[in-house]
Amino acid sequence: MITLALAKGRTAKDTFRLLEKAKIHFPDFHEKSRKLVFYNENQTIKLIFVKAVDVTTYVEKGAADIGIVGKDNILEAQADIYELLDLNIGKCKFAVASLEDNSISYTSPLTVATKYPNVAQTFFNRKGITIDAIKLNGSVELAPLIGMADVIVDIVETGSTLKENGLSTIEDIEEISTRLVVNKASFATKTSQIQQFITQIKSVLE
Ligand code: PRP
Image (cartoon, rainbow, N blue to C red; front, side):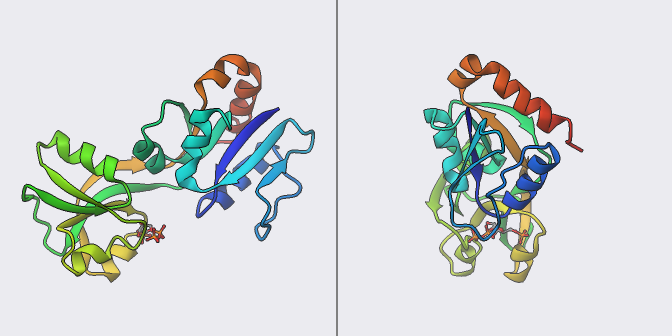
């Protein structure tokens, strides 16, 4: 049996749709269920349903062989795992945003509010800009409005959260989408099961 860690949240529905299309069914799963563990029909796959930020931890530790999670969490986690497939769902981007200005001359040190401090550090380090990263767990857009940060680094999908809070993108950082990741040891010991799973998914990707 292989264990698959799947991220709860906004991309879960699309991921289940993709699995169904690939003929990987979890008969017990329904959206309102509070269950966290599901099995496919022939009991060859155990699915654990976990917080998106934790998927890479389960995979790196070997508690899950495969993970399905956003590139945002993969970049932030810096985990020692393989990223093998882009599932082409959950598309959005990382961006730097601030109060309507569009100025690209950053002050240094720059105060950056973000759910992704590692991503922010890496991006600004490459530019030679020193930052003071303030880690928040949500509603990051608030930080520049109340004078707590100069800019934010966050994911932007439709752009409406930025717009409704009077912020705008200064710079794009990176494209994001949902990816399939694999534990390194599992890839060596469960190669055929993992390859088969990936082949099934690949066959239905658009
Ligand atoms: C995410 C992200 C932005 C928003 C972007 O937050 O952090 O705030 O979605 O989406 P948009 O461009 O379509 O407006 P999420 O909804 O996960 O909530 P959070 O702020 O509580 O983290």
